[in-house]
Amino acid sequence: MKTATKIFILSFALFVHGSGALAYESTAQVIKRQAPPGIGNAFYGCVEKAESDDIALAACQSAEKKRQDARLNAAYKSLLSKHHGTAKDSLIRAERAWLDFHNTSKTFESSLYGSEAVSGFQVMQKEIFRLCERANVLEEYLLISKDQ
Image (cartoon, rainbow, N blue to C red; front, side, top):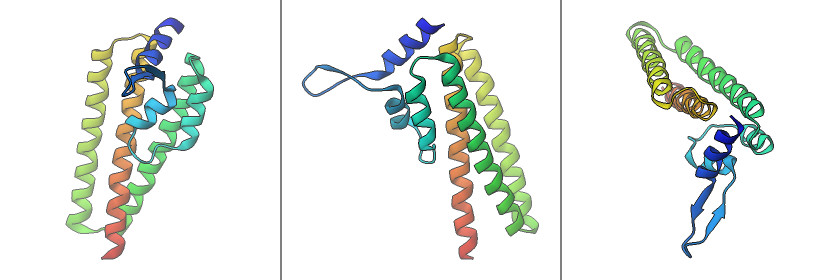
């Protein structure tokens, strides 16, 4: 499994500069470049420290998933408390639809990527990014709700 992780890290960590030379880009740098705003700096530091240790990388992802899920839940609860009637019902339906999309996407990605450690890392990263993106959207809705 460690070999698969190293291959994954190296495949994403090398990129071509204008001169055509290959240069090293850390796993954390690659993830940061792909990530939506809102992923915590602690996550990038954790990934940097973990290097190619599968267990440490999984712990980094688990902690960030928990943080993003908490962000999403806090924003959702705040939105629920600010809206009533039709708006509240629409928010509930939208969140249920998003949860269905999120779960279906995770199931599909799991079947697409397979069961190796590198695949699990990729599936979890996509899940974390979806949670973060949804939390970003709900937090934006909160800003709009405050202005009304």
